[in-house]
Length: 208
Image (cartoon, rainbow, N blue to C red; front, side):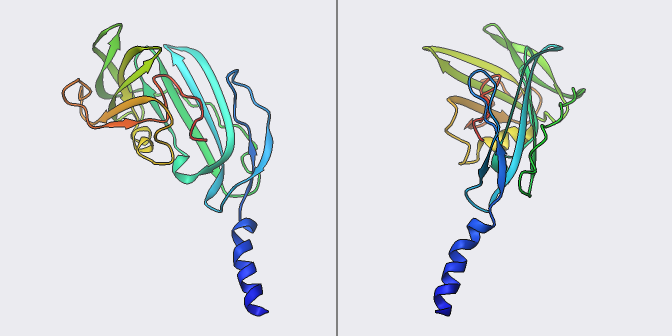
């Protein structure tokens, strides 16, 4: 009888220790309805994330989401293609419904001295000045509607690292090359391809 009780307790323990979090995953319109959800295992935290996309100084989109998330998915960084920049800010916590508040607006950052190639039309030899934590150059190729589009720019290390996570990879059909060093994102010197959680501008909140 004691053995049965022990086994039952062990089996129930992960369920008892899982968090209940707010969930709000936006649809194509960008809006969502907030609900609550119990996380599947004790490895999950409550998370909130925000994507801000700018074209120059003009804000193009502001997409926010909440859900149970793994620690390695709770990242902050940015991708800067020159003509557009997407900033990802996330906040994770370890108590029930602790993700009630939205993530604060990410502040615009200053150039950090690093430089990468960017594309203007079909010409990808223009220069973009990396900003804030953008310490890698990036090259992404996306095939959509039979057309192949190439984008180049700067990216934060956290974005490139997240792309190699098996939990995240394979979701978005964009091949990403990340490398370090000024102008390393030329056709001949980029590193091995990665599948990134974000497309050229944004792929919504696919890793949630």
